[in-house]
Image (cartoon, rainbow, N blue to C red; front, side, top):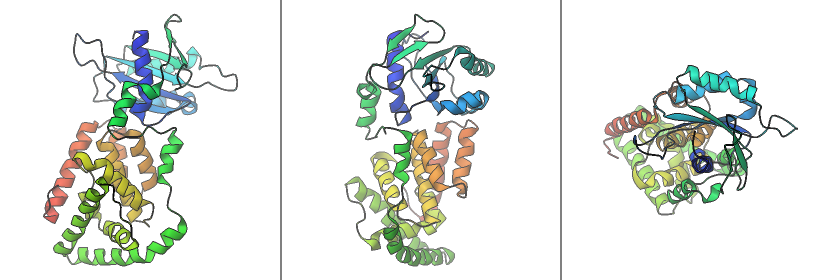
Length: 340
């Protein structure tokens, strides 16, 4: 059983691991100790679902969580439940926890500790379902070490999943309408270049996209309709998307800001491809919540999104997904005659 101070630290870190402050949720959190003598634990992965969905079908949650964590060898698992079962504001009773615990044990997880947390706010109470004497008070998650590291990394912890999803709000329709003819003209030219195998023209477009990422890293996003249309229209070529699935190094978050800016103004299919690129960027740095939101924005018609979701659901480790993305980008850029 994790010590009270250890549980305080673990619970306070979950919003930073997740990327937003959740409510009424269930977490599956495997823990890995870096060494046999270590009393510290690492959270390599956490799965979250809405409490209402888990109450309806606990088996579905167990299956999804354990499949996604298939390549992780965990020393123990903490099952965290937040919220209540209804208007009485009571935590879910033990009979709700039992099928979750039993399902996890069937998948080989023998050390499972289940706790209830009132909410992710300073002073919220938590208690163990196994030992009524094992309880504590949550320190302020906004001041946790995990939160500090997240901020230092340049990431944002959103107030809710809805706020995270709101990132994918299209620009006003009048702006999209104004840009649409320019984008259509560029997209037609790009399609023609692709059909004619005009490699120099496509190389020049990829170079402009790469430069736009560098500019974004220096605080400069495209600021004219012509520049925006030129960048958006380039995604009419699916190979352009494949060359930009990841952005290694210090420019990754600037690239995400650029792709999101373009997505807000892009018509289909360019918008779907931009959302797919945002999803692969999020997968590459392990931001599962953002990846799923981006997948929703892309829609299931984008085959790459469907393949990535299947990979995650089948338990393919993020390290393998990263490797696949790196190899795909390298191969595509070799076609363009570019390196990254």
